[in-house]
Every structure is written in structure tokens, then in C-alpha cells.
Length: 203
Ligand code: MG
Image (tube, rainbow, N blue to C red; front, side, top):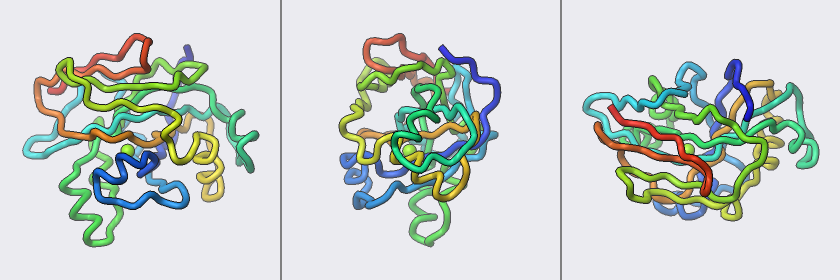
């Protein structure tokens, strides 16, 4: 397991699974769609705080950790920049995101709020293929690496065309279908299949 000292930038990929792009009525992009969350939104705790009077949705994602500074130019180079893999929730204020999208505004406020970047801080050296999210012991989301439109390496090469990667950056790599609301009192379990899950409670 890898010990995290400090998170730098938080990058996210939108619409990286066809099933999820379709469930929100979006087309599959021809290159990775990148956005950011503020790094003050990182949430390694066992609690998810849902802002009052808001509907917050879970997006289950594999999170990759960047282990060095630099600009990978191709997939081979990009592989050496990944130092770990974990599971996270890209929490989203879906109604606000819809309003912002309609106006052509950035999604920032719909993605960046206190505790909205939920991450299991137990990063692993190898990435298992399957991952899942249970809410109140019911399966809500299940993902498999083979269904990702853009690989981890594609994503890192793409981000590097925009900005240099930094050690301590993390990347949320896209959610499979099944996104939905979280409510106060929900018991959440997220993890790689056949690995111990991270358990959280929604308050
Ligand atoms: Mg997402």
C-alpha cells in the first residue's frame, strides 16, 4: 500500500463509459473530457456530508495517483507516472450541473463542494479489473476496466498536453452507469471486487 502525503491537483474525466454517457443523454467524446475539483474537496474520511436541500449523486470511479512530475508523451511513458490505484466517489450536484451545462458555464460549483472528492486512501500497486459500489447493501454501480473508452495512459497523455503532471496529483477516471442520489443515513461500501471495501456513512 502507498502512503499519501499530500494531494496536489484533482483531475476528473467525464463520460469515459458509454453506459454512463447515455444515461445522462450525452454523446461519447472523441477525446478525454477533463475537468477539475478543488484540492480542498479531498475527503479521506469515513463520512460523506450531503449539503442540506441538495441532491448529491455518487459517481464511482477508479482513482489513479501520480508518482512523479513531468509530461508523458505516449502510453508507455504514461504508465511510469502512475504510482497507485484506488476507488473514489466523484460527488456531483446533478441539478446544478444541469443548470450550468444549459448556460454553457463551467461545472465547477456542481463538482467542488466540501468533501466532494471521496477517496479511499489505501492506494494499491496493481489495478484490479472490477470495482463496485453498494448502498445499503444493494449494488448500485459496477465497473470493469475493459469498458473504459480512454485508458489511464490515454488520459494522462491528454492531460499532459494541457499541463504538466505533478507528484501527488490524482485523477478520477470516469464512472460506469448507475449514478444516483445519496441520502442521509445511507451506508456506503466501495471497492475493487475481491478486496476489502471502504465503508462510509452519509450524514
Ligand atoms: Mg465523474
